[in-house]
Amino acid sequence: MAKDFIGVLDSGVGGISVLRKLVCELPHEDFHFFGDSAHNPYGEKTDEEVRTLTRNIIAQMVENGAKAVVIACNTATSAAADAMRDEYDIPIVGVEPALKPACGALPHGRILVMATPVTLRLDKYQQLKSECYSTAEVIEVPCAGLATRIEKGHLDDADLHALLGSLIGCWADKIDGVVLGCTHYPFVTKQIRDVLGDVRFFDGAAGTARQTRHLLEERGLLYKDNHPGKVQLKSSLDTSEQAKLYRWFFEEAPLD
Ligand code: DGL
Image (cartoon, rainbow, N blue to C red; front, side, top):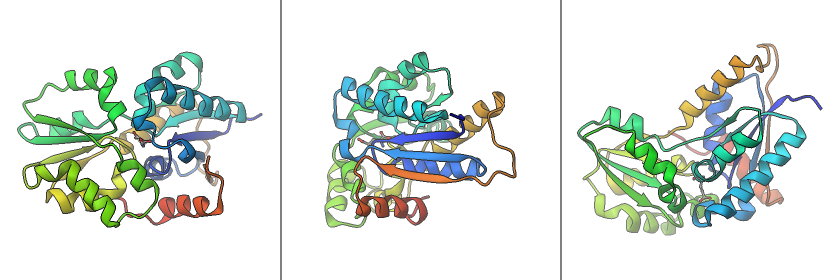
């Protein structure tokens, strides 16, 4: 089978925030997005569970002919990216919390890192933090429950606002920058600003899209400019409501 598409995966709709950047960066490529909404949230499972779920999705994508895979999920990247790179020789691109750009932009600032409990617990994050030589004050907030609420697509629900209030309300007007360390969170930047006031946001999606282009270019795997790129969206919750929700996140949900 021709190796012709880029597989993009997440535990649900969050990876669509990365997919949108990938499509802008690589408009002539074909993308197959798979969101594992049936098993969301990954960020509150064991490391081993996340690794197994991620491995199964990637195995399927490779079997279907993926020429590269983007793990558009910080949690799955932390738990499984290194193991997947050992197993496959196609490019496997991951995402990581944009802590380095945030520390670079706000060297004397106070930075909140919002991410899932798994992402913040794993060594990969500690490693990343140790590489940020900065005087910025960095505060981690494990945001249990937030991705699950975003999954529903009711981004202006009182319930979601109340959760944000309880997670980060104590930092209102005291924060300079927020690292969106989960790919679901770029869909709620307005709601985060409602709680924190005016802050700068940092997320890794644009960097991931550039890195994907670079790796494919290097291996001569990109389509020519006359190829009309296509996007396929799939969820492990195979219902028409879910398909509509994924479309909405891809085409309409406010981002940036
Ligand atoms: N979107 C995923 C991430 O970037 C996590 C959401 C979840 O907990 O499933 O970490």
